[in-house]
Image 1: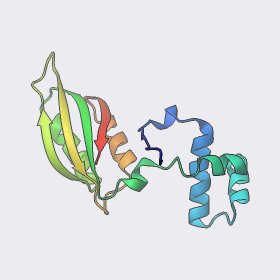
Image 2: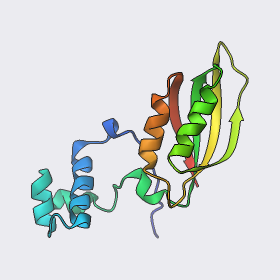
Image 3: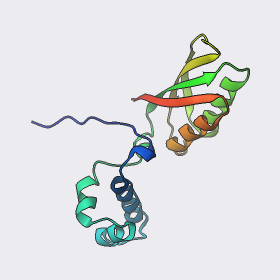
Image 4: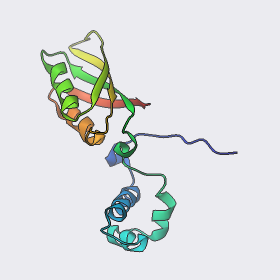
Length: 147
């Protein structure tokens, strides 16, 4: 019987260094900068066994996001133009906004649920989320789901 996979979305700072090095090694191989697993593993400072152990289990979030819908929860200050700034950030990344739902602000803070379609021309989804987090007045961005 096949075991079901469970997926988690983590910020880079929460991922063990060995897994981040596996991602770097995979990129080196895909780009052709390294010709073998041994060379790529040596270049990033991990063993070949570590590479093989994790290579199918770690990949950048954006690699599997194209053509998907990502649901985000954003907590932001209740300020004129702030929602517009967030939506412009999504638009600049080339993603398509499907739905927007903003709660009534409580104590000057609103919760926004945003469904975003990731298109083939959309840039790096991780960068888009990071750019949303950088908008002044945004408290946090949380990925609720990916469909």
